[in-house]
Image (cartoon, rainbow, N blue to C red; front, side, top):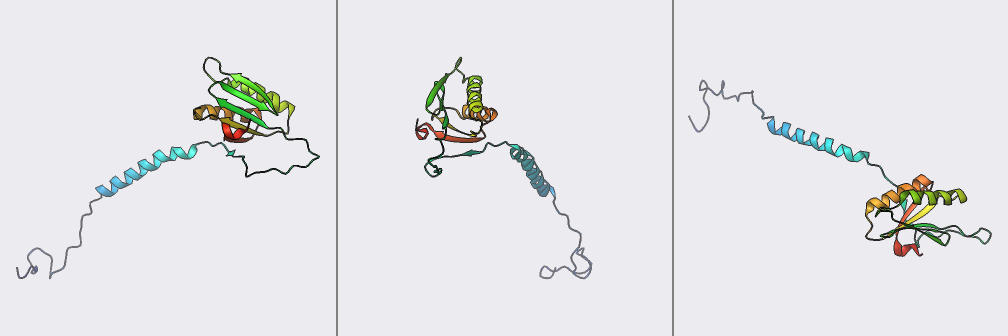
Length: 162
């Protein structure tokens, strides 16, 4: 060989041309696609989660009140270790736990009674203690939604101002 150059007739093709057939290794590309497909299938489950709309009512949202309208009923459900405490316009009704579990049926009944008395009332505030599990808070929110209170706010017990 002269300087690494291929001569005609030495197996490198005719007159120094490169061969046009080339083998492409597709195994890494197929591995990448299979990983992407598996990732997309696994993450597709997360798009089906339900959501609960919650707004925070605090000092930033002051309502306009006139002297002619009666004071608005403030409905607060406090969730703590002892159970529920329902405050409807100043009356504090305790709903203790039954057998160590939160009494959702009694809470639903009391909220239903309040809803029947105040049919135009749609908002409720749920105040939770720091050591209450999130699952119990969500169950409380579901009970409030079932009772007909569609505007659910979530605050800390200190912000409830009871």
